[in-house]
Image 1 (tube, helix red, strand yellow):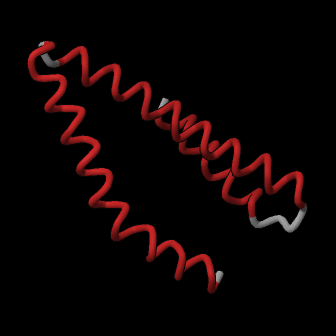
Image 2 (image 1 turned 90 degrees about the vertical axis):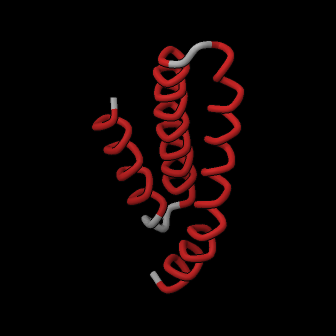
Amino acid sequence: MFAITASLVLCGVLAEHSGRYLLMTAGGFAAALSDDALQVRTNTILQDMFPSEQRATLISMESFTFSMIMIVLSPLAGVLFSHW
């Protein structure tokens, strides 16, 4: 699953830099769809590993961790792609 989604994200990112509007749009859609599919799959695996009493904490920590990482990565991605 990881290899498939990683290859689709890579193809999507490459398509986004093609300069053709329809291909760029399709590439962004494919990358987002693949990322979301991987997240749904990993969330399902994680939720099956924990009892229901701990799931709320797990989901809360996952959301918090994602937010903290994106606070750093979003500006860095903006700088990187503005110069690419």
